[in-house]
Amino acid sequence: ESQPEHALEELKFLADKGKGRKPPSRDEVTERICQAFAKLEEPNFKQDMTGGDEWRYFVSLFDLSVFEDDPVSKAWVAQVSSRVNEISEGKVSVSSVPLGEFPEDRGVNSVRDIRLKVSDGSSTLWVEILPASNGWWTKKQ
Image (tube, one colour):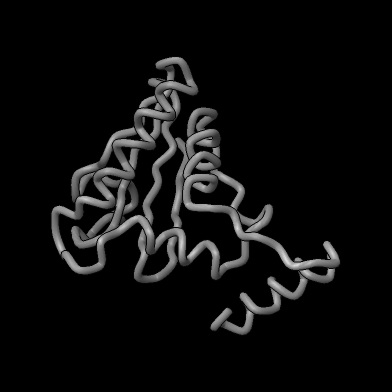
């Protein structure tokens, strides 16, 4: 790990388990997110991940060679939307939120940010993913 706090997290995993660990794959983390969204909850990124694992996952959601109309993030949003719909048996939907329609004046950057509305019609979980700052922001309404 390149960041000291992430290296300490890795050492803690090693101390707790007594052996090295295999970080969860991108697909495993995406499934964790889908399972949580289907219950209108935040996923647990601390279970078996370091901050470095989290950062690498967030960066993997984007094609960093483009600035707009990112095909990688669009495909991820479509995958998550479909899987959450499947898990929740159509009760929860995931949709992208246009710039300017995000709560608390967030979502002001159109480049490389993912803004989602996860809703069952009565409750909403707003999610913003900001790869540049390893950010994950949510608000439940």
